[in-house]
Amino acid sequence: MARLTRAELQQRNRARVLAAAREVFVEQGFREARIDDIADRAELTRGAVYSNFPGKRALYFAVLAAEAEQVPEPTQPASAGTVAEALGEFAQAWLTRLPLAVEEHRAAVRLGRDLMPEILADEATRRPYAELTKLSAILLGLGLEALAHRPGPLGRDRPEPLRLVRLAEAALTTLHGASQLAAAAPGFGDPFDVPQVCRHLAGLDLGDRWAPPHLPYVPKARPVDEPWQPPDAADVLRDAPARLAHDGVVTILGLHRIGAVEEAIRSAPPNTVVTAVLVTGEPRELLPLARLTLVELRTCLRRAVPPDAWPRVRVVCDTSGAVAAAAGVPAVSDATESAVRIEAGRIVARADGYGASHATSV
Image 1 (cartoon, rainbow, N blue to C red):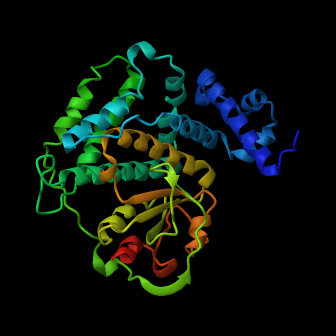
Image 2 (cartoon, rainbow, N blue to C red):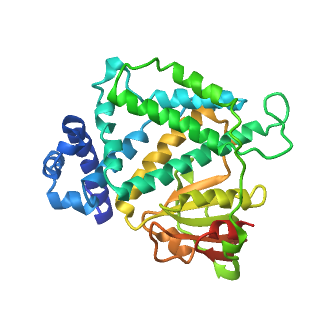
Image 3 (cartoon, rainbow, N blue to C red):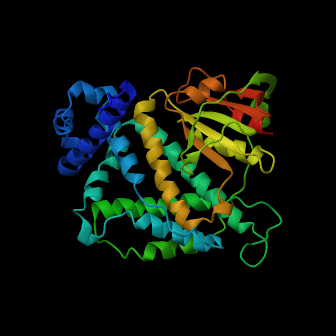
């Protein structure tokens, strides 16, 4: 039998830790679970667990992200033709992940019920989660806008661009509330009412308009001519290669600055692909939380928004910092905001600091 390489051994041990942790979290709950119990279940040492995960919370987020990735793709692409239809389908997909009153002891329910309390317990998780939820609203809102702007009877054929991010925020507020009640009060309310509520949200005019950053405070992008040799990376939003070598805008965003991706998307010329590279000072703990949020969003988008209406943005979780380093940003934190524009395999412009995403896109 061939001897495993160091990388293969680490990958195998990581998989064993994740499997053991899932069992222990289901049986005992996150709060009562102990790393020693997980190590024993995995038949590994405590040190082997910590060599793969910096702590119990990081391991918990990784288990939940791996669980979310097990949801199968729909057999048929989404076919919604209106904003109302898409919101209803999105809500229906969201609700299929929640417990019914008769299923309150399901393993997945027990596994996920400590997520929100753990996020709320610490500012280190609360603020990134707020930005990740904002990113979910931006991406859903962009998909709804694409449907609303379609010409003909299925769309609204509006002469002026319509921003629907606040509408997406309202829908996510409704759905997060349904999630919390499903965990705290199983059986409360009729779950079939929630998609109907979300469909009716499409009729609201929230006066949502896009305002670009205040120009005096936005740095100008600097013209440069630098090599662009990005590493392989995955687009978490589509579960596909990110294709970073292609022309477009790459914005490096710390987990406290994720919302700035909208500035890049709306400022860029039509058909320009924007890549949001998420970075943090705590990548082994917080990027699994980012991946979890994005995978759950992806699952619902696939069932609600047709492929041709998906936003022209890729999202990369840069755990190793390799993509940021290739873009000339070797040191990152939750406050990072830098951006580069790629043309013909070269970096031709860059900006750093507040407003960099907008400056590099215009």
